[in-house]
Image (cartoon, rainbow, N blue to C red; front, side, top):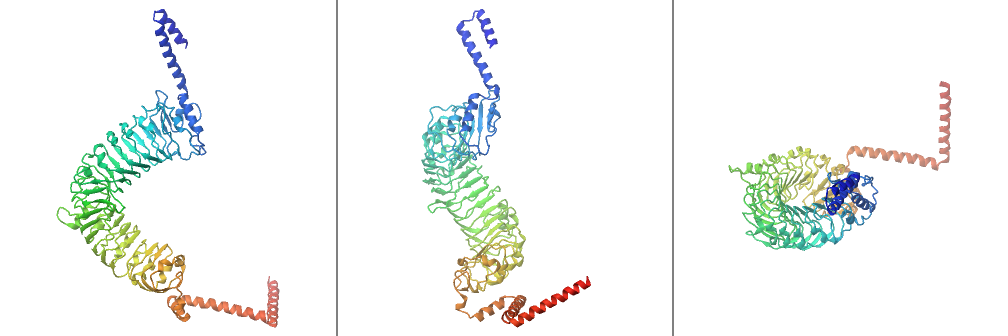
Length: 624
């Protein structure tokens, strides 16, 4: 301050006007005050604002324990600009352990005029102002993350005034209502996530003004309308996720279904929307960078159909999910080598399997080449024909899931096939179950039900977690070797005879279903089987009796017949021990009964015991 006065007097003596000197003094004074304010590490007003925020919560887990002292720039989650001392970043994400309502949190944050990044994701916020008179960081804030909170509010009006925003994340935060036209004012946005809220209505046409947008996420809402009204103009999009909405309208093959302008797309998810789409041969020809494509749908009014292009190897697809649609015709002849997951299940695809030819025309080697990188392949519930090539198992070294259920595939199962999950039910397979399957120690699910297998289960298959096996009663008798078997479903077959006793020693068995067969006799009920008390697992077997079903075996057979049946099933060595135990019990209680009824016998017996004790006592002391 003395320096300011010194320069003021000196300049006045040099003839400078008083008004100029007054203004200069004020500037110098403000500069000195600024330096004095930030000498403690941050501005006192901003420190007080943060302390007001802390005062509004009950921090029982001490997440904000560092918020003490004068230097707020050293507090956890607070970052200041080194040159000015202003708070530029407040990151409190994943602090949902803060207890109590965070009252008036926005008023505290609004006192940080230089704030550039505000991350309040999963904090536990439940209030947000609908409108604000003035937002102090409208020209500075670039990143706003309020995802995973519980606002239960419409989208606040003040959001659209923060024109500096490049990243806006409001995922799963309880917002409802419509998306306003003012969203188009956020022309600097490159990332927008409004997913899993309760937003409804149509997407405003002003969305096309977000020309810099690269990622658009709006899944899990109730948005309606036609995509072609606005989507074709968002040419910078790399990721587009609109799944699980109510978008509708028709997209013929000549329209924006190919998204001709969206040449940068890498991820496209339109699944679970009632959109009518007709796929043609030019589909995706402009999206050479696409990596993830999902257009699956579970509801019955789905209208995505047509014939798939004969080749998709011009793309960089890593995941392709088109299940539960109305695609028809043959599978693509060529697939990209980058493909990891392919799901075309529940369509009307036809043709031979394999269907991907190699350049030399060798069908077998072709499927092994084109599917070599797959880890997930699901072609179930189609109309595919042919046999599984021998080389398929050798080529799919990385695959963990193969599902060809509900087709018309025939022939034998190549012994090279053995994955984590192998589902081949409801086809036309024949022959024996390959014993080589036991070599694949990681195999957990083997579903071969509703085929035409014969023979017996390989005895060395006992290390597998086996599901759903279509077999004859001779196969069931071999199950005893499967010590690690956890699930066994033999329902809806034509099994006959009695239930093998060997089932009771499968101590890992936690699921059993033998319903709807022709099994007969008394239900085996011992060891592990006594844990299965649900009678429905035996229903549909008219000649079964005994617990847990309500049909008594004594209605149809004499006690002697039941005993004879048990004798057949219980080993001879077990009968020897049973007889010995019964003889001992009978002899012991006969002797005790005589002593109880005959007083003279009882007196003689105990007198003999006392005399024997005395003799032994005397002999003991004479010896020792």
